[in-house]
Image (tube, rainbow, N blue to C red; front, side):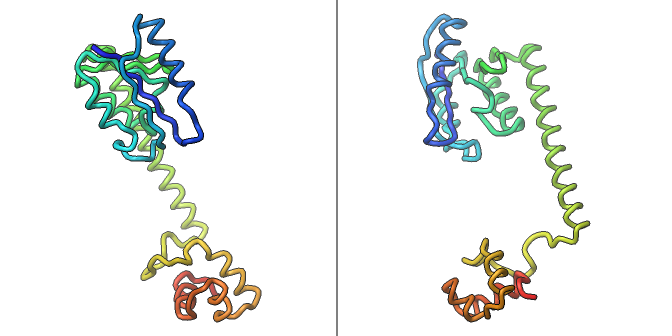
Length: 202
């Protein structure tokens, strides 16, 4: 039975020393042993499970092994993702320890584990509801303010996307379309279509 430490930082500018020290101290004090294997990742939680080496983690872990992480947020970016991952690990008989939260799931479907996983599922559902509610409120507010939602019908992506403000500024100052097109190094027809489709004139 092995003890595996999982460490993740979001960028190359961050280092893993703090998480590693936290895990080593915990394992030494509470598990009376060492860390048999490490998985160190430099990737945002927005990256795929493959990029975060979660698939590799699942390959390494065997029934009876212990996974130790400094905190839950190192594993995933939402309660829903954490619930799915932890539930899968417990089903595989993996003991999961998160130091910051003081959580320990022993890899068995005992009452404590069931309660914890139920709580995760409940929080995940609340999280989804809150996101949905915020989205609905945002759309409702945007409609009330008369904002156009989404890209106008019939428009396609353009190399000029993101520069609408600059283009609108030139037009407001009286720069003609041909000169605006030259400034942005596109043809007159491209600029004309972009201005019309994004409703930048007027």
